[in-house]
Image (tube, rainbow over all chains, first blue to last red; front, side):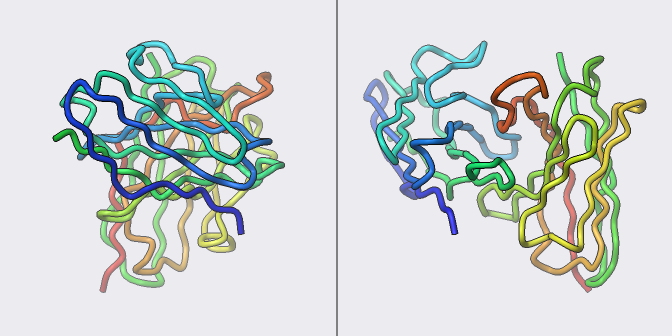
Length: 108
Length: 123
């Protein structure tokens, strides 16, 4: 079955760059999306269609894609960026929506 | 601004049923695909089901297929999830989420979410 694989955790110091990867066999053919979720809150879409930043999302957030891996990059990390991050995509005919297992970003 | 408000969660015994509702404040509700997503306590996000803008197409995760039914009422700008034969593993916060519009080439994402409603399945 199709899966999206993320590292369970990533840690960075304030001001550094955080990179969170997501791997999946269908990612070369299907767009990936990224969500930020803080404790007790609903998720927020931070990257759309692999690389697009929705309105209101800081420019520090960017996305990239290469082969079977997509990457969320957070530049100049701030304490407020500490959260869980999830990638999301679909199968080839959009009959199934899939989330990665999530990555907990810790700001040291 | 689009707002989604879920209701209908609560405590239910294994084997029981529950119906969740999601009221959407957007004049263009009928243009958008809609979805339910859940999150078990301390766990990650799990997609449950989505429905097309007209209601004619519905897809389900394998874990709920045959037990849950998604529906919508465009006149009432509402989304529903009928949950039958509930199990302990269905315990989660259930989120209602808006997907993209039917006229877009890409709509399989979630741009607005409700705050969620907790469903607890326990005897």
